Image (cartoon, rainbow, N blue to C red; front, side, top):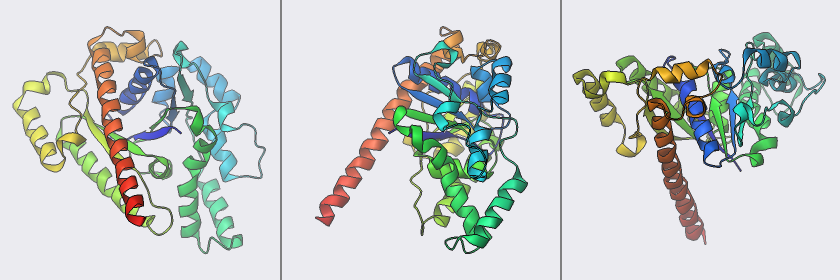
Length: 312
């Protein structure tokens, strides 16, 4: 079963989507089966992996994430596509790399509220609107991913900045989350705010279905010439006070114009220009990512075995 990994930060403009698509492509290049899910209405991940013309066709055919969400909001509507039918395999002509395209308008707030109000009135398990909302939030992304989770090694979610319904539902569905950040105070504040929000969400689900999401690490992006500056060192010192060495990726992604230029070809830089400085950094980051994941999952498995041994 795939590891589900959310890439997120409360603040935008930190290189979140660039990290998401390049990590996914790098994993596919080393033989992993990877699915990118675009949960941001800016559709940056989608347009980093396919042309606008291809996206327009997907939208016309109703083969975007919007259709899958609509089918869950209104189960009585025509069920046009299963999750697998919306996914674009072999994206960017890269074996193992797939995309679940996003949309400019993923769901209608009024329709969601109406559906949940109806559920609260007729379903004995949903005693009030708040409970109906929590149940929907808990199952939305999980339900969409469940039918295809065995088809991939990794499902990487490109979450929108902020804390909306889809982002919260993504946290519930994820095993780990990656925090991209720029070495600047506002970006660090976004990390701290997100940590508090996740902890609050975790507490709200303690009595129903505990959340298993854990921090995989903080990735510093768009660092440029800041690596050796006093300003950069001050910011990093603050981060190191709040997070352990294991929670901060050693590999950092520098500013590289080739990363931006790759978007013009609708491919991540690791595919469009693998010799570029940014591409090499993402490749190195992917190796570190796999090692961190192996360490964390091994620790989890060890703890689980110890718990079972104590029960025996």
